Length: 189
Image 1 (cartoon, rainbow, N blue to C red):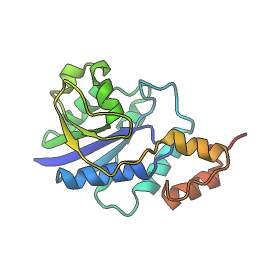
Image 2 (image 1 turned 30 degrees about the vertical axis):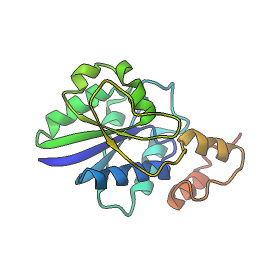
Image 3 (image 1 turned 180 degrees about the horizontal axis):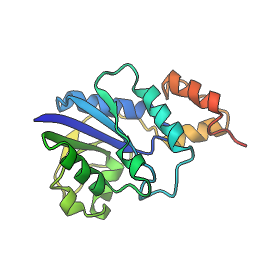
């Protein structure tokens, strides 16, 4: 069976932390591909700061150069709130010969008991937990742990820096930064 990692998120904007998590997990678990799945609206957030179109374009630019990275727009096409159970159920039906590994940060590992239909979801996918500063990988649910270089980086941090005119050099791919500047995203207006 083909082995594919799933990295979901708002990607508002995508940053080097996302790419490091994806690549380190791919290598550690010998996964053939990592699918980036931007959410239309994640269940735990009200909305994204930039449009779906901009977030998809930024993910495309961030993934460029890594032939193992793919974009999957299943949650964007479905519209509305993006529940992982619905996504994984649809992917399992569409790709019955793929074993999926759903990658989440330690902050989300702690939140697993509150995920929609978590017990059924556990039958659809193997969860992969990656460490994050300030969080531990503690849960009563079975997860595969992957060690990655720790970096306290988030899309919120990137947006705050951009809004206040601070540099994001070395924190996001240069191609993503050029897109943000061209589209004037996250500027303090």
